[in-house]
Image 1 (cartoon, rainbow over the protein chains, first blue to last red):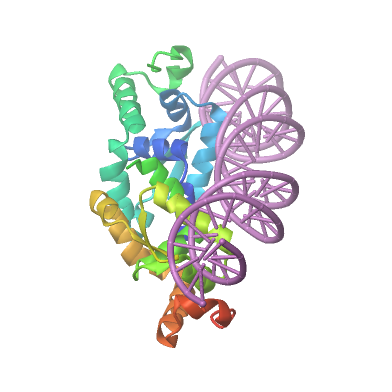
Image 2: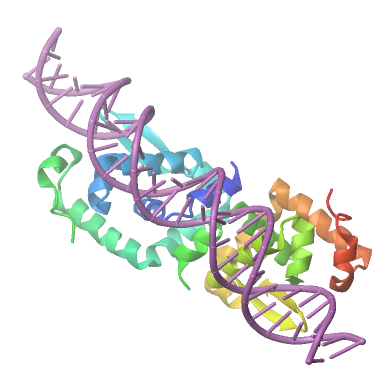
Amino acid sequence: MDLIQIMKALGDETRLRILSLLSKGALCVCEIEQILSINQSNASRHLNKLSIAGLIKNEKRALYVYYKMNDDTLAEFPFLKDFIFMELNKIEKCKADLIALEKYKSSGISCDDLKDAKGCLSN
Amino acid sequence: MDLIQIMKALGDETRLRILSLLSKGALCVCEIEQILSINQSNASRHLNKLSIAGLIKNEKRALYVYYKMNDDTLAEFPFLKDFIFMELNKIEKCKADLIALEKYKSSGISCDDLKDAKGCLSN
DNA sequence: ATATTATATGAGTAAAAGCGAATATAGTAA
DNA sequence: TTACTATATTCGCTTTTACTCATATAATAT
């Protein structure tokens, strides 16, 4: 993996917010959209950049694509583990996102009914 | 220090090359220019971005401004130490730069005569 | 088969970042 | 003082990046 590309991928606030969420476990695109309040196309593009850099992987299940951290890359560059798991969640914006993530998880809402529950997570 | 700004500052190849040099010790602007073969205005701008992010500090001595790592920030974010001192110098471009740095150091040339020795370091 | 849905991608636009040349600034040296 | 030098900054330009809207794709469901 190209470290320069990795660092470029990490040089964007939205992508850092996505990684912060994924540090807590796999999520599908529609979940990331809702939790971060970004639009679908945007989410998809940022996820693609993170994938190209090798930071995340994805797996398609039915209609949904689940993204998660790429452990191989984390193993190759130990500082990334430290950064993503120890530092990222100290950033204020990421803290707020993680609260929204918890709210989503504890709500029992699944991907399938997310479209009907729009807005319930923002704030 | 704002971690998002730090990561943005790290998302640029030229700035990574500069940090790679500074990981070996303080250098003044004219030395960085010569070793990396970038122009003066460019060097100054990138150094400014790294400074604003808190990654480096500078000290003026006579006409020269010497830049060096900011140890406070490295202490605040330990992953940065690992990244800068362990990973950066594995990047091919940085390896080449570090060879040019060694060549410069062992040449005995100082800042004062750099302008007369232009080009001697490139390649 | 058709309809629906989640995701990816294309096209156009806007914003940001990087660069080179020229100029400004601040310090040194004579 | 004046001349010189290293660095910072401004300007105009180019390239890159991020964003939105619309469309395409692929899978599911009926």
